[in-house]
Image 1 (cartoon, rainbow, N blue to C red):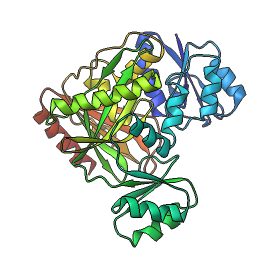
Image 2: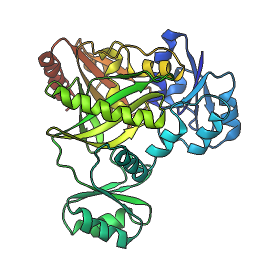
Image 3: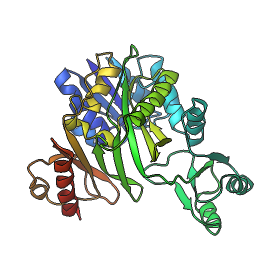
Image 4: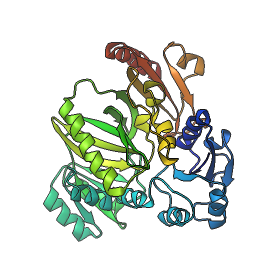
Length: 362
């Protein structure tokens, strides 16, 4: 079977590697001349709005998917008129604009922080009056890994935030005093079957994911069931196919949706070693119409992102339980160049190795 991917980054690389044991071959389309996915599969060099490149991608194809959510919706719809495209282009459209996304979730009854659209300075002042402080001013499009947002803690921050971000479509959101951030990775097949990975606890630093721990060990079953119920509403409303990630703020027994990602997700990388079927394999299965695999955890997992640079590989592998995934990318500040996973039979052993590895990373 042939699966084509819009985007040639590390997620496309890991989708490709997950497809090999199933006999699935992939090709990626990416404007870069040397994307890291191109090291493990054929690569078409082209822009995502280049219809000649899109036509080439669509040839001899069982399905097209994407590895990031900023693929032009028009390109995804053009492809969908010719070949199966999953997740559906509507999921891209919803997730690309924070205002549309928050409104979509709210209308489904999924709890979200208070929010307001901001186009002008008058809108901004009115939104501040309505929502109050602290709050977060965000660009509606193209923000990721903490980019395109400004936290306001006092009235004096308003002018600075407006100078930094004003002049484009924005959204102001109420700041959530959460206990922790968690994510739910789920998958839906073409025929409507669904599966859920356990809730994952995530720690961010400077807006980027630093560490994930799974499964969450001290959360009531009711909270997991509630997260899955909300996810089902989203999956069904979009007639979704593939892996979907939903990031949540947990405040005691309450969950508030932060954002969703219509793709495989960084906080699900632990599933490669830590689950019976990884998120990447289940994504391949789903978009190609194959039966979904078990999402049961194999133990207790910790995943660390390697950002910017990392210690020498022999040091990374000095802990026997460490599993290294290098993305074939050169070092650069704030660039994800790999990750390391630990899977242990108990949460205590997992936490011990995680602490040792955190010390190694400094």
